[in-house]
Length: 212
Image (cartoon, rainbow, N blue to C red; front, side, top):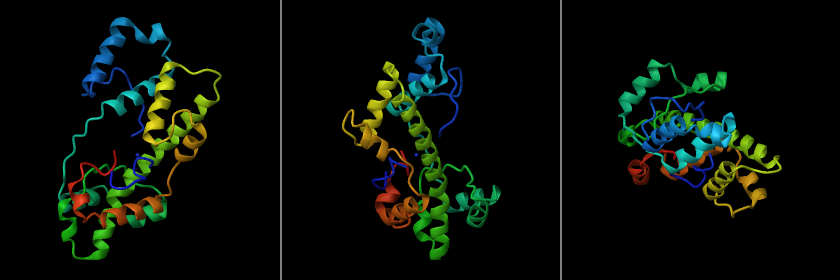
């Protein structure tokens, strides 16, 4: 990520074990195992939260990034096609769910400073909102786990992943609760702009993905 808080600020969608669009091999293996051995019934994982926990762990272990770097003209055309502009965002407080993971190389060639900054903000804003949504869900799950008298192995593994992700010592729940929190959008944009030079720095141009 481009800056320290990126891991703290990042597609919470309902997950289905039978979704044929999954391409990750580990998930395909899990699907077959669930069908063959009835893992859900055997280990009492029928609960939705348990399934989400399991997929969350799998995704963190087996994330595969397959991104395309679009040109500034292609991105601008997409924004116009879906009628995505910052004025509407300010008025409605709603952000278009556009996921562009790589900054365009040509962004540094946009001479108009305002246009360059606007494009940068429109690219990173949906990603920041998506990350904050995921953090909100994770935080709710964290407190659900903490309010239980005992936790399943899946929940314990999920906690281990979060300790590692947020740089927290194992079992330091008080620190985890503080760090696992949403970041103000304006602060996230400001930090991203500072660390990447509004997307023009060499590090920003060579990065694999904006968030991940």
